[in-house]
Amino acid sequence: MTNAAEQIQSDITDNAVVLYMKGNAQAPQCGFSSRIAGVLNFMGVEYKDVNVLADEAIRQGIKDFSDWPTIPQLYVKGEFVGGCDIVTEMVLSGELDTLLEENGVAFSKEAADKVREANA
Image: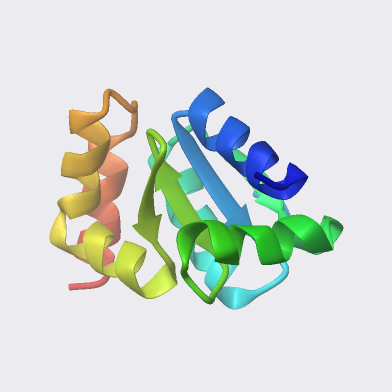
């Protein structure tokens, strides 16, 4: 395993929720990263944000690790969930709520409902 793969494995093992993104949770640097970070922040999900722009090895390494070509990438309890489109669909369908609940990840159900109401 490369150093990047070892770091990624450590991140997703040591943190319940990890978002590999461009920028960070407070200052996303692309619209797709902003969308996922914004929803997670609004729902009160605690997560580790990893700025792939800060490390080219991680930026390429996460794509190789997941066999997924784009960033952002969301992981819950060590499992790859998806990128922006998949996560957006999961939020709107309630699937993300279920995934977080099943994995014991705290979030605001009220905030999640507000996101769905606003996008109905």
